[in-house]
Length: 507
Ligand code: SF4
Ligand code: SF4
Image (cartoon, rainbow, N blue to C red; front, side, top):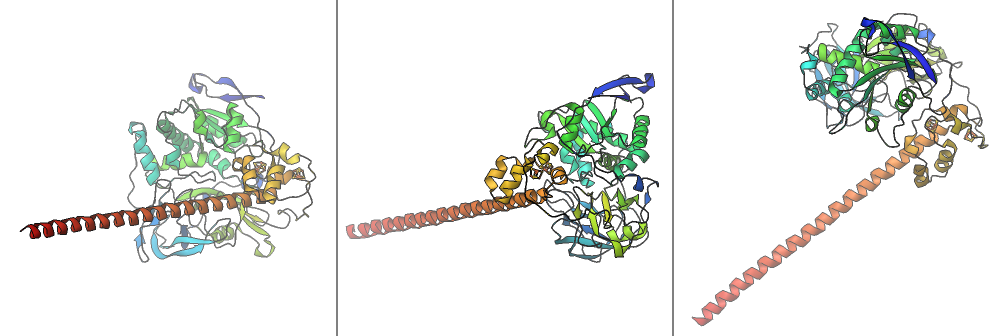
């Protein structure tokens, strides 16, 4: 597929617009979904009201949970670190506003498990008073490792959904070069529009963040991608990149074009290897929201304490996007946008395809929350009876990763955890395309999640058993060593006694 676009090529818009043709590729499968995007893009983004209470789970990212460095009763300022990163793959937490720590304990958090987890709870004082910030104006004078450290200290994680600490993805590693840095503005899940609004409204900040990331990675080229259903965002970013060599590309609207591997395929034709990372083919991908967070951390010294997010769904009176403080209870946002508790069918964090149901409205927004979807009976798909697999192959046709979903299903169903891994279960991105097209209504993704959980649990048990075996061997070795030492001492004493006795007898 060849798509024409207007972009700032190496000659740049300043020297005259250059019409550049970039070939776009296609990934296997995917599905066309009703967008439901217009509802939440009618109003400009404003800041959500300052909540009375902020609930900050210590685990909001991939990796080790953060560790609290405050105690109940402490008064904290906006932007002050309240939990530090524990371990390399971790991220610190900062107070989103000024106030007092009133509780540290296990509370409901947004997680598919529905379990409680450790949180710091603050009562805001209404002053919203910042701690002292340390901005860095000349990012290009800073060493990339210094930049990464600032980004790490700012608690920035990928805002596109996964929540991987960003400083790690800004380090290509020894001997690796980055050819292309891709900013992902492809928001392919229905209903979610926060990246669209961010690109419309904060194009300059996205470009500044992109430049900082490029400096950290020494990336040769930069591309910003979005779907072709976002004309306002496209125009805004074209204007913001005028006179630069940053490419702005529109890709066809098909779900899940925003998946990292799918987007790389569409833009470059390259495949990220199974069990591999984009950096293995010289590419690094970040979300557009992450770029804004990086810009604010470097140039304003601000840690990650807020984000754009969408509050939408048939149950919401005024669907819209708000800039929301991390830790804001979901109920505050529902109240701010208006909702109908009596007709609420399902509350989802994320989109209808990859999001998960919330146990209640008392859970907080976390760093990776891009959408709250309040569904009525009409929004939520009617429960259809599950029927036997008819081996139609529709699931394989729809799978964007070229897997065999039907085979995965059979092996998950049979609990054959070895066999299912031979079919590359861990390449499954849980996009739900297979379930969506299945005429037998089989909840295929549930089976894959179940199988992954079982495999991880078995792996943990194996590791535990291995550690126990090592501890046991170590103990046996210690006992043997002590026994040998005691025997040696005993022999030495015996020798000494014998020599004294011999000496006495001789005398
Ligand atoms: S789409 Fe459903 S019915 Fe068809 S092969 Fe896949 S699992 Fe079986
Ligand atoms: S959920 Fe997994 S198996 Fe199903 S279509 Fe998506 S990637 Fe393929």
